[in-house]
Length: 461
Image (cartoon, rainbow, N blue to C red; front, top):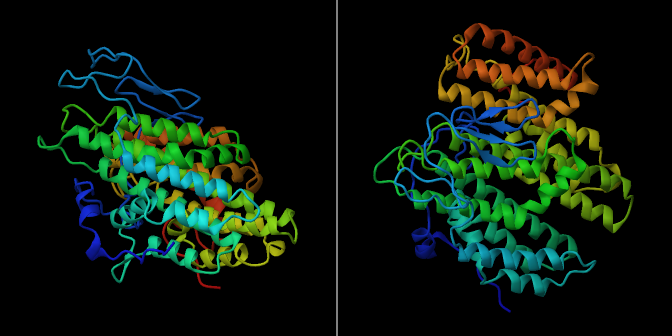
């Protein structure tokens, strides 16, 4: 079966017709796919679950979103959802039909199943990708996320190149993980698009539901098993799968805010952050776990496969490391693509945590008057919650790094910081911020970062 050539932008009229409309600008400098680091988010409990204090919604310990009656709401909830402001029943999460997603998931499932064999058949994988809904999705996602170079869609071209080569089992595993990366980036870009929607009477909430549901479709149908794996290997304090589910539900529930043409400016961006940053936790856990398992497997084909899986899980984290620990990217990749017996899992973890400690640091004092001055505002509140979500990647490791560290007390301080910003309580914010900065800087010292920082990159070795 002849392979398709890498798709060029000039041949994309149908894909462009399918793109979501732009609804708002996002100037987040940290992101390659348009994510902003300062976006609205919900309240956070001591265990890291997101709750809502103003709309009557809560998130349970299992991550399920439930709705209770609030003083400001008189609509009753039906079995299928809450009434919208127009009196119509809101659709359920994932209710929007999506033929492309269904086709892509069916082909992806074939690839995943074939890669379970010790010697996967490249022809089976080729037939599952070339000229299928999966290839169409990868091409669409390339346009949505802007992953284009010299007019060629980067990921589609990379997949076809793997199929063109003398394909090995590791090549097919790399191909599978390239698709995972594409799905992750598409989810990020799509929920960011919805969360940045500006109020406009011309907005059609059905289109926003469809976009949100499209992102959910790829999480639910493809990435969910990775969340379940991450829950098996990571700290018990946080539930990856449940937190992502709760984030998707939270955002979906608030696509129609005070008006059906205006999203809830606090809750939808909050949900976006919960989904997006928890996905980073997912990949962070799997990278470290599979790095360790690769070493334990010794000089075997299984070790090589585990190392390549760790490398695949690391790819979504690269842009989080860039600008904070740029040299660490090459350090990790050299280990994961080299001899598995010499991988240092502790160093892989340290390199990742250097970047995430710095990203967390930014949000430990950002809202104070002498920094961003956003206390009492939605952006300030959002950024605090975002910082807490980043913090969840690293605070399980502070206990062994810092004498006297109490993880639960630390998370309570984060909650106090978040509440103080939302309530415009400067004295409480200053007290909480001082404690958060101190613990973060102590951890940066443990990681051998030269000076406690939120933005400085690590020097080249």
